[in-house]
Image (tube, rainbow, N blue to C red; front, side, top):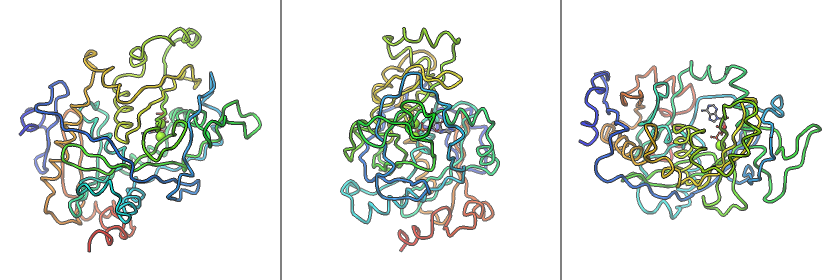
Length: 405
Ligand code: A3P
Ligand code: MG
Ligand code: MG
């Protein structure tokens, strides 16, 4: 088949007790037509409250405002209300999917859904052809009633690492959230006013990473209809109930001498391609795919110094990014390579898992430059996944009861 003969030798390095899908070569153009990717349609939105309660409302929705010049991203670091890293769960997305199914949402009428996944997982899958050595990942997969459910798998060690970041790394993570605070307001067109004494102009309120606004969309890759959910940072001007005004916010480090932040003004008329070089091709692929999957049409990047001062911002139209990158040297990427691989990956899973016991939990391990391995988890491993909760595999019991009747 198309994928089997793409890469012959790396496949030999795969283990022999598993089903395998060999890695696509990012430089070889995909053969045949690129599987089409359908424009995402929003099915439902929901919010997580500061208490991390899921509500089917838009209380956590934020509106874009231009951040002030020279915004300091280290502000109020000590007041960060940080959500602890826990095992990533699919529960919230299943509640949303269950709700839209109960309402017989018209966007679900066109045919059966093949995949239910958080956006972050789909981003990893689709960007795999361009992953670097350290960008491996593992997924738990279940197939129930013809639907594939994906859940990221983090080992205990990985979870521990994420909860115990080096102070420097943790601060850098905070910068991204602080940028979101400066760029967003509770109401459209109303500039942020300081809340605490000492808050700088434009500060949008202290960072609470429990609070998130999420959108769930329906889309289709090749023959596979997908329901994908993910966080949306804000909307521009108004919320229309569609993805049209969604904005993704990103920060990017600008590594230059200290005086260069002053000179930086000169770059403002420079073409977007120069900025691309600064963001880096791989990072831009992640920005692109993450936004594309949810139908987010605009990405606003804040360039910051190592100490967390925003020097300039640049907005990108998501759909125009591939054209900026195409054919630009050895680090260029092509989304059609990603979609061809993603399609092959989904077909591989469907073929391997079809007609198997539905309670089975499968583990997919992706190794960059090698490929994916698929295997069945043993009872002890499944216990680790269930973690003593009321679950069938990693699906919550209530959901299982709802779909298996
Ligand atoms: P950046 O936007 O500067 O990357 P997102 O951009 O997906 O909305 O996430 C907001 C911020 O969360 C990011 O800011 C980054 O600080 C943090 N973040 C997201 N994913 C992360 C990851 N995998 N590891 C560390 N930090 C992450
Ligand atoms: Mg976000
Ligand atoms: Mg963001």
